[in-house]
Length: 76
Image (cartoon, rainbow, N blue to C red; front, side, top):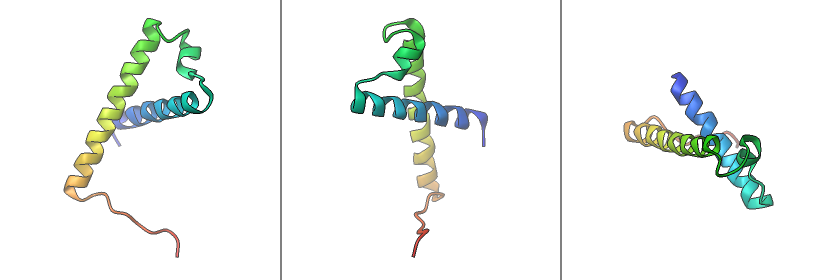
């Protein structure tokens, strides 16, 4: 797997976890770790997470188009 795919997946996963924390507990982990929501570093992180989600969406759309994604049953 390409390094960019792994990096974007991890960033999108972090973004999803952060949104879950915001929704459940009104706690923004990215803002806490990076020093606030309006800090330049935090804004860059938000942009990178958004771009990562867009990248992963494009990969999924491509996989669906060429038929690489199939649902499988793992239970009886």
